Length: 262
Image (cartoon, rainbow, N blue to C red; front, side, top):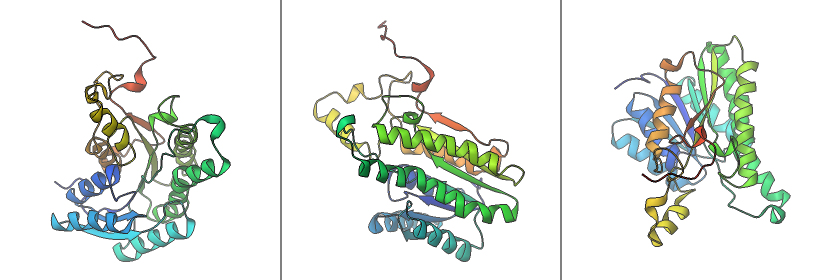
């Protein structure tokens, strides 16, 4: 398989979950991948798995919401790979479900720093390199929580709504350059971020109810988000720009309703 043959890719949040699944899939499709995560052992493990499968990976321990770190891994990728074709700004944090009146400014600042400023920094420092070559794809992880209420905490949801606006405005700011900017809005996916929810359900014997609100009536898997990221990274998505694509089993397609049992 070679849908990304010769592509030079950066994936943040690559130490686990969606980031790891995407990095491995990109490498399997022919890309050279710079995997970034703030947890050194985790990102090194991702790189090792890619190399063991015959792929090319460079691991970088960095904070995707810190400008100096972002500049560092973008410069490293450009230098060692000879350029950058794709950035998947996937790193994010949830912040938990803190009641509205108990939320602090510090909590909001940290979630916005990682979830929204992080993707902005990836665009700010990565897009100019792509503009020079006349082509590139930037993908940001948003969420269904950025589309409507009750899919995440307040600051998390606001940050992801900001990501959706960011890709729309950035795509237009980059008009005529050949650089595309899109977002993926995952629904309920089992990752390190959501694992406590899944574990509680299993402990209480209610695992079968996970994902029951979407038409597919199940949770998703990281590889299902990775597949959409692969499409957006590839030349197959050459006419897809400024979009926020929900990958949520159909959850965002409907209003709340009482399930009719057959």
